[in-house]
Amino acid sequence: NRTGSIGYEKGEGYTAVSLPYSGRCLHFLVLLPDESDGLAALEKKVTPELLNSCANLAGREVELYLPKFRMEPPLMKLSEALKQLGMPRAFNDPPGSADFDRMAPRRPDDYLYISEVFHKTFLALDEKGTEAAAATAVAMMRATSAIMEKPKPVVVRVDRPFIFAIQHRESGACLFLGRVNDPR
Image (cartoon, rainbow, N blue to C red; front, side, top):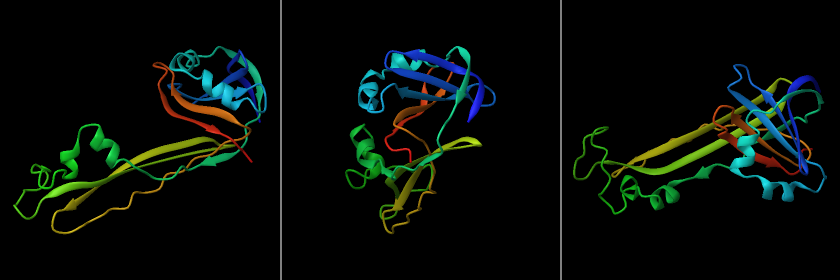
């Protein structure tokens, strides 16, 4: 429960509220559909333009009740996507093509290549505020022996079906964007 002047806007079929972080550079944005089953319809309306229009909502006195939640999506493996985006050599595809000589001198039978890239996010919301993090880990391998580093886990939280974002106010860019289907 929070009462005070926060960013507020009533849109068509939804209400937007934003809570600034200290420094006011970032804020926690909630897009709440008017109807309890309106999340799917609201998701269809969410565009870069809509999110940008929410970057600097006008302040208004609001009594806001936010649920506690924690979200920790599964670990994502990004190597296949990165290969398709144009960096197969870094993953030693084709074999022998990886070149990390500036990190570790290459020998014909002993060289480094990226074996996998992991990405993990987490968000938590409680009475103390929000905590969010994202981490990406790159696991390297030697062509002669495998050395894998496990990524450190990251954490996340939310309530009633809604969309949320952690947004950079000046640019409108969303650092995090998600939804909560069942906030219990």
